[in-house]
Length: 212
Image 1 (cartoon, rainbow, N blue to C red):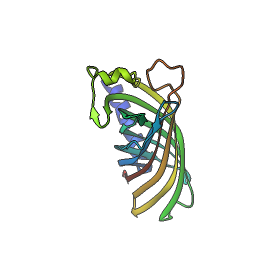
Image 2: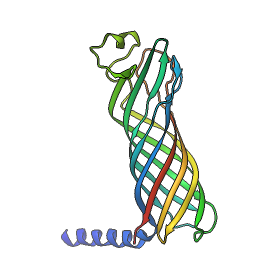
Image 3: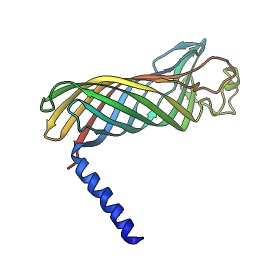
């Protein structure tokens, strides 16, 4: 049994070692605007930052596969007559992506596009009325049909984007893109029969380092 376990471990490590040269890993961050579809009120700009780690596996010249694991601030900000309501759910977001890179690998600048599913797991939620944080004890929450967990705990959608990778040095790339995320599920727990889907548009930046 021990010999079989050691053999399996050795095979895994040797496989990972042989493929590591095609893997890039590093920090990623983004900032933009998030909103939710089919809500009452007038949309306002809602800051939507995120930070995490990204990974790309690219053995082929043009195709790559990867994704990110990030903490993502989403939600909405809307004018509701005399008051402004902001709800900020925080997700642990896992977008998976298929990348297509243009031009030869040795190019210093390589345009790219990507597409894939995105999964979100809510880890926190904060709500504000006129910039003041509120809780279930606030009378204003009843006025706007708010409660402690406006957003559902799980979200799934589609993420897509386009940008460029800039070679900083051999095996190190600066990644920049404009990305859009569209939710597929009803993200908001309310009494209406409309589908309120998460959406955001962000400028994303990261630095990925090739493993050797």
